[in-house]
Length: 117
Length: 116
Image 1: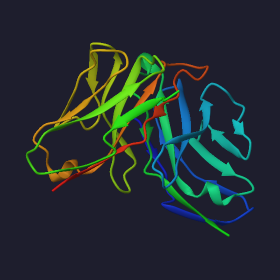
Image 2: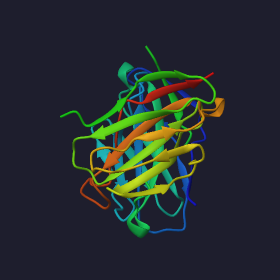
Image 3: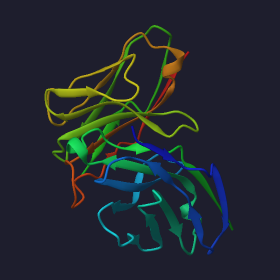
């Protein structure tokens, strides 16, 4: 079974600064996807960014980018120019594509991001 | 476009009672999921379905049942509620697997259930 580890229960960053959230995963598969989801106090799960394991190029979405190191099984999220609205829980998630990949996502325990004004 | 709709948003149950959490999606997604989120524990998969009439157990299925009679609906039933089932429950759906975004999960707003 795959596991996803987020080693930082909480991170704090000054507004407008850059912060990096860590995620490692364990898998023996070669075909998979990785995701970062944001959960603000409203509880809604919001997709931040998605990475295909077969792509070497790191995904980027505006101020959000990832550092995907397949050999190291590492998938960190970098948030540039942090804004107050970025304050939330951030979850790293893994999705297998083996066997159809129907059984959804495996989540890490999350990192609580605090933005200091 | 409503996306994934869950009801109720909040519910308090007594030990031993039963209830059904409703989930419906209007995106014609084949895959649907139920997760539970406990404090500090991330989300864990309870059950999933790859299409009408097909369901399968996830990581934590004990104490729950599901059915999938239509593409749109995927209700989660709690039988004989226990305090250990106090949690936030999320329903999610995806179009399928693979690239082009088909494997991205869209989540409902969550249902907070308390069992006393």
